[in-house]
Length: 116
Length: 116
Image (cartoon, rainbow over all chains, first blue to last red; front, side):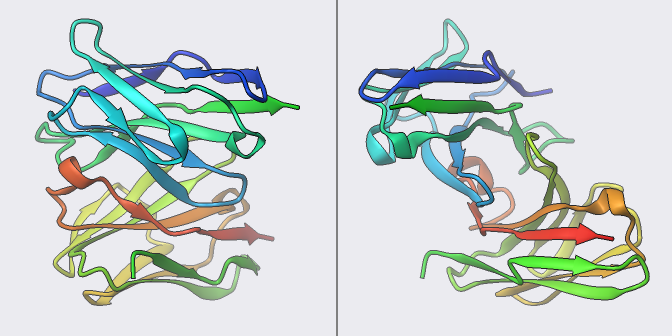
């Protein structure tokens, strides 16, 4: 079965400092990986996706993620945090097995706080 | 149009009421989904419709009844709900059920449901 593990349930940074949200995945197939962001009482917005093209993926709002097969990681980074980045972030793998095919498998989420 | 629109945004209902949630997309997506999300948790898949046919029911209680009248609309009919059903209900769509692996989903902003 495929799965993702978000290594931090909560990350706190100061405005203007770098952001690192960590995600490890488990998949016996070549994975499709996504990062979604959810602001309070809102739906989920796709930040970026990896689908076996370039390993460094650039997304919206200055976020990027690097797919590292050797480390089974897909960490999300941003050089400089903004107050508006405060939200819940989900790392997601797309299921390819018989039971998981076509489904999105979510990590438990990382809450990002940004201090002024 | 690149949005999934959900109505209403908020709903309060009694345990004996019947209500419906509505979801609409005009992106030509042929797969649509209902998710339930409790506070501080990732979304949980409830139903998948692919080409207007119910494809996946994740063992959801019968008090939740989905309906897909056409390729752009998805409804969730609610009847005799329990207080523990209070949650954010998210609708999503993708180009095809299997295509979620490459494109991910587009999510709506959700309906915040409170059962009293």
